[in-house]
Picture (cartoon, rainbow, N blue to C red):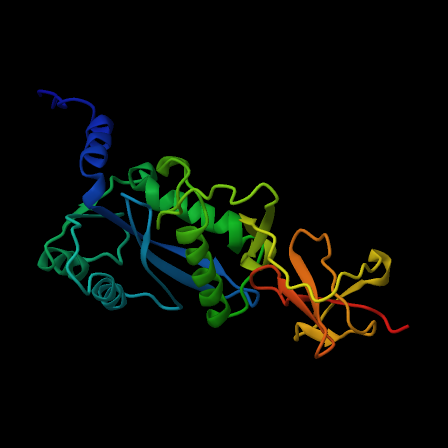
Length: 275
């Protein structure tokens, strides 16, 4: 009996395929997420290889092939340049899913048995999603899980830099130069403070009304839904040396305004205690 001779290394051929068609490849996968009530939910997503953008995601309790086809309809509702679709050998990707992909002009490419490295882009995104949001935060139900995933996808697209993209984001985040010598680096909380985005903040301009100095010890910081408070000292103006906010007083209305603040936070107000 003659032994069948393989032509070349199959692994190298697959890597060559991924490298040659990187701009027209999309991958999709399913992964499970347990909730605080010990119920399992399934997350489905579609990711492109070129910029690592998440084209679509959704969660469900009972996935089926019909549900997968509907998700693909929503993903490829408009014409797109993608020609190849990578998927594993999960039974949910049955003949109906394959037929839909072929009908939309995309050639399905199944990975080998027990070879997750062939769908490495999708597998790495699952690992990042678990480490950065799903392990620290346990979702309570479908609505909570959907909100967590939406926030993480937005952070992945807009803020998180990738080594494969030369420290860029999937939606192209331009390099931000320092706008002024006195600009301060601030952190913008993301995902409830689990991660942060860093940016330059230029000290806001103030509108002085009177040159009257107030000692820093006479100020105290408090948070309020309103950025306006009464000013007990009367007509005065003061700029506080604070990296995030600048404060000025308006003499006609005897009010203190807090200008600036971190994105997503309640704007701090500096209030002078009554004498």
